[in-house]
Image (cartoon, rainbow, N blue to C red; front, side, top):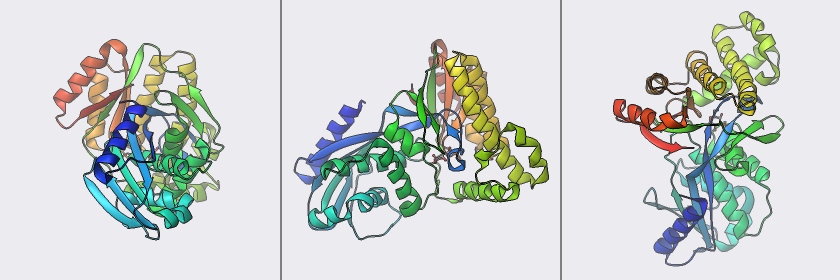
Length: 366
Ligand code: GLA
């Protein structure tokens, strides 16, 4: 479904639920990450791709009463009433509320707000449904109240909402890919400087995204534990950010605790894989890119320990079925894998996986 269709559908959902036309309707895409996992909160490099047609759409209109927010999700069949003064309550509307509080508290106090949302992104699939929800919310509310924010400012604000209001200590990759990325094109991003550039697509091959059927819940311990381990590793190694280290520093890891050494090795090597991957794409070296995906998965599995048996098995099965590369994508602990496949192998690989893994679903080919 195109971005325009998503916006049209959410406007219709708003009309059906509230009995009036929305004033604005907009959408924001999810993303798949191709290389560079958990490097973003370490100031490293990432290579995400905003997704075409998989995203969140939001419609908004003023009402029903000062400070009151009526939020309706057509996808979750759920209506929630919140107040702009509310704190976080552990519900999907928190993501929207956090955005409204950040940029439009006084406006909502004055006018109240009605919101409808639809999403074509499965939650917990590792494809940034929360970032898409935040970016769509900020796009809609800034348009409604005539506020100027650049796509980069929206990304930075969306991450702040997730860190400070929702309480998830994520980096900026997802919000940046959703707000600044061009759907269907990979984006090379230096998360320390926010310098970014489009990356070429592999010739003669496509990416297949397969949901393992195991949903992750990142606000649970795993993600925050990894952030804490990276901070501890910085302290042990006397650096400010793990991306201050490069491949030449790998021997230094012998001097620190084994677990912290493995976490650091993943960050150093995955960071380097993003640079090597970009070089491979620019040189048209599709096989080389695929190999980097395979070693990135191994590093996530063995050093960073964020994969699950289901995603490990799916990656192995994709490679056995002839994929050029495959890896778990996103925050981890379940979610989706991304496969690189020669165009003429896409169907066979997808069919082999769905046959062997009844819970797996092909979500997109891009
Ligand atoms: C989640 C976070 C991102 C990033 C990835 C892992 O998606 O939101 O900031 O850390 O995990 O690469």
